[in-house]
Image (cartoon, rainbow, N blue to C red; front, side, top):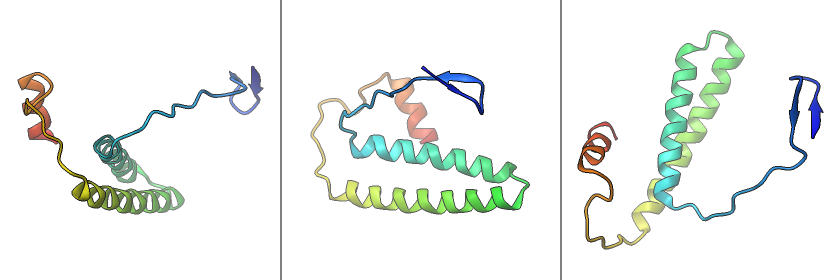
Length: 98
């Protein structure tokens, strides 16, 4: 373990990296969540430099989201037996709140 002098905490010398493949739908969901976080940060920022950084981050995430939606449109639709893989309530909540 290394000692991080800036934060006074111990950090691991190496990090495990997860190389499991990520599908487009998971990437879209993560990008959508990151956009919500960036918008919330922008709405609460008061310093000029911080506002600028949120603007760049939002623009970047919007371009990523657009690219992923274009890729998803080209991907063939998988046939599934059940429309919802989770409980009906969870499906309804995700449908209503996206």
